[in-house]
Image (spheres, one colour):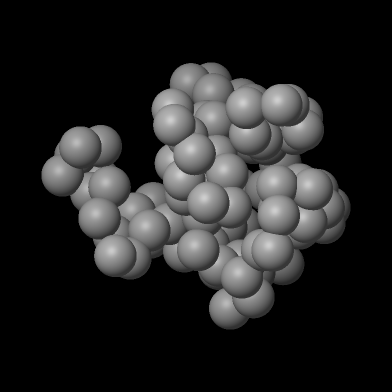
Length: 92
């Protein structure tokens, strides 16, 4: 099962939704890093808030109610804490 794959550039993030594409009606998307307003580590996963968009609840393992992120810049997160650190670094 292929889940969310994130690739970053200096100013943007490219997201491939893979198996979530049908549910989200979106195959790929690109957002400016500056659109990420906050990243919060919660007990249920990581909450990503985006400027002018809805929030995303994600996790490293696809726990109930979250979208699973497989890799960020080709590196797989090992825990939600690790995923949080990768997302914060991505935000810049």
